[in-house]
View 1 (cartoon, rainbow, N blue to C red):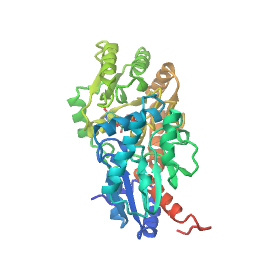
View 2 (view 1 turned 30 degrees about the vertical axis):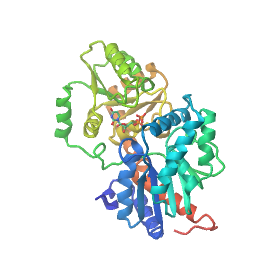
View 3 (view 1 turned 90 degrees about the vertical axis):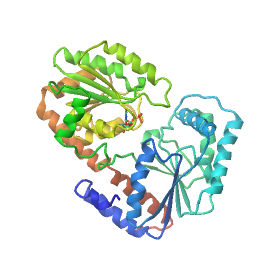
View 4 (view 1 turned 30 degrees about the horizontal axis):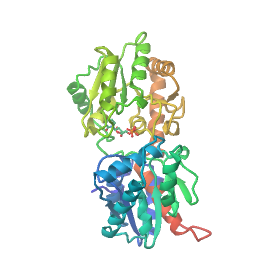
Length: 405
Ligand code: UDP
């Protein structure tokens, strides 16, 4: 059982107070989240923590999942890709199937709620079957530069909602309905982010055969070219001429990415047997190992060339690490250059910042402290819950001139 009080002393007190107050105000209302999976991915992870927390606060919250077959999910994956700008082939039949599967789900799902929160494009057609209450579309992906014909289809549904929520302002699309920006967050009490003891971190280092004899540079990422693993290796080589160090590249080749294995092989080849480069292929459930790797690193890199929000940045900042991030996607929303981390636009820039951090312990420490504080104030799950409750409350009170809390 997760309780709000578990976050006391971790999350900002004002967020916890506001959540309690909003929960009191909303206690008579029924809320419903709908997405397309109970496990896997950030959306399910957040919902699995958020739903019991809100129930514990006396809110009537349900979480339903739409069901579909392989054909449905192949179509929705193509929709997902095209909304992020990758052209895919579509036929009218495919759009018909997307709608028909949602229609079947609408017959079995209990859609009775005061506020219904529909996540991402898979269940977006459910709006056709609304029979009351407010409906909000929560878009977790970057739709700023979509294949227009696909956005037209999706927005024909999304535009019928009462409001839309996007993760970062620059990922949003102008829509004829109310729009809100709510960034993703991490859960400080999850296995990936909870505090670890020294021996727990040491055990992971020993298991992965990473000696702790010199500073460790780390990037945790799917093996994907947009995460620029070879660029990280080049930056490490520039650093290595002056500062002895190790590089750990930890990740998996995502199962839904056919290029993953090829990129992994490419990176291994590029590392060229360097004994100070550790390429770790992590199985799916490696949260505690990722937590420990982030805690043992002297510098964390996320040198992406294209990025969503970049949760690995948030995770490492929360652990007080100095993070060097590519100046793309949601990374500049998190890193204030030179204050709580560094933003870079090149391999040379990354190498320069790594050396600066390795050569200046006091600066590294203060950057790391600022990073943790920034995440505490902006990117913990309690802030996301606060914002969701606030949007629900604001939408339900839209008619009133003054909103009292
Ligand atoms: N992650 C993981 N295993 C891996 C690589 C990454 O569990 O092998 C996690 C990582 O800790 C983070 C998430 O997957 O929580 C990646 O999110 P991010 O926004 O950084 O990038 P994405 O993979 O969504 O592009």
